[in-house]
Length: 303
Image (cartoon, rainbow, N blue to C red; front, side, top):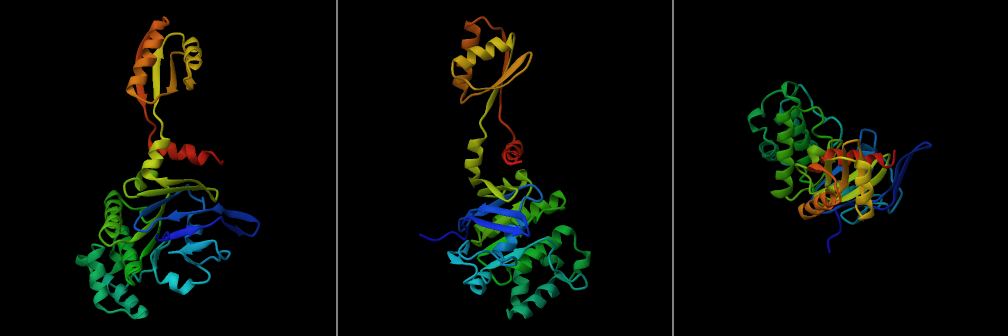
């Protein structure tokens, strides 16, 4: 069985006396787009810098394609491309000149520059000074620079931060193409679940350096249990009746109550139970939390 592209085993990291990463165990499968989610300051960038060996990790805690980062640092880094914070672009050079310069530093064929420009959708802007590029174009060029040595793994730190809607869509489409057509594994950090769910196959949620959730997008949806809001009279008595029948009441207000439920059939059973016991039910509304709300709930657990 192939080892994961990234695996951290109980990783801890401190800045002086401040614990930044605590017992972090990531597992990023090959070929996946792994959305690394958390509020600003949660430890995402620190984790990415550790994965790149820019910050030193203890031995046998960080593995890339099954090999310890400290023991196989050079070999591992050859398999990784990264865009962390702002891309290193020379504004006085054109897009193609930036790529040719990097090709020369890496000892790569000059033909690689044109190939990458087309891949990231900058072929038409190849001879334009990058100082005149939009922020989205600069981000795509930054990803292009990371792709030059043909890495198996891409680490992207908030690549859509500050972009307009068109720029976000372009980066999103590029990530999907890289994973599906070019078989890249991508770890992308963000603080926006609504953005990540459009691209990621897997999600890890971090806050205060602790991993609070890890799994597929489908696993995350399973946590998002639907609730039923019922408008009726005498909510306190209705809540007592439903509790005795084994239902979990989420909230009780003057004219409505909210409880967990599992299906339309169960909603009908709840309605019948209330009516048979003399309650006047005026409406039932099934509600599922937006994933952003679920994300906030998860990250609140360790505040």
